[in-house]
Amino acid sequence: MDENRSAEVYIDGASQGNPGPAGIGVVFVDGDGQPLRKFSHYLGETTNNVAEYLALLYALQDALRQGYATLVVKTDSELLARQIDGRYKVRDATLRLLYDLARHLIQGFSGCHVQHISRNQNVLADRLAAKAVKAHHAHVTETGMA
Image 1 (cartoon, rainbow, N blue to C red):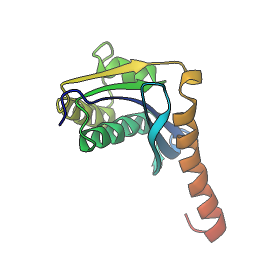
Image 2: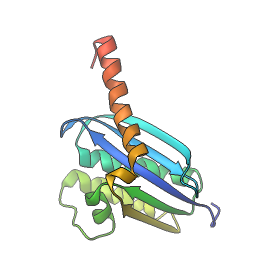
Image 3: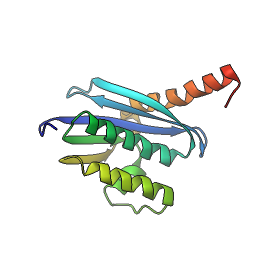
Image 4: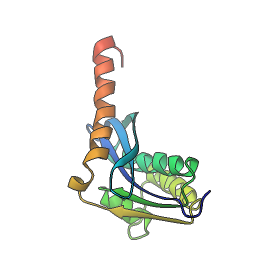
């Protein structure tokens, strides 16, 4: 890992219904805010909060695999950001498991900060998360299979 290598990443989780079909969007950007790497993934049926945590976990794992030493994660989920930084308690058992895993992965960085941003600052990650859900719906409609 290059101790000077840092990244900024935008994440979003989306669920149509709560719970409902869900997806994630992750966008790594350069110093000028231009996308370097982006991906989305369909999750299946889950809640919006679980989707937000899974977006974070995918981003953390990908950043570690790419060799980043420091990371700034930007999310429009106030709950996620405040739970990770310790301002909010994690009461839900499922979120507690995901929180514990996120905290474990965060220890792999020399520095990692999760920052809450407004939804209008997170448009690309939001679109990717929605795209993952829509792509699944299109496949289900096309094949008639769930």
